[in-house]
Length: 60
Image (cartoon, rainbow, N blue to C red):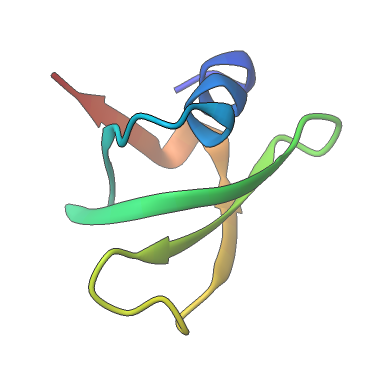
């Protein structure tokens, strides 16, 4: 995924189907300069982590 699309998803009120390492996640924040996103698994909001935006996959 590219940084621009990750930012669009993070800003959207509509929940997108995005995964990180096969796990469905929620994008909390995107740092466009660093190319990283703060995410958490949908089933565990307390498990926040920063990951490269390129490692996120959007599914339709």
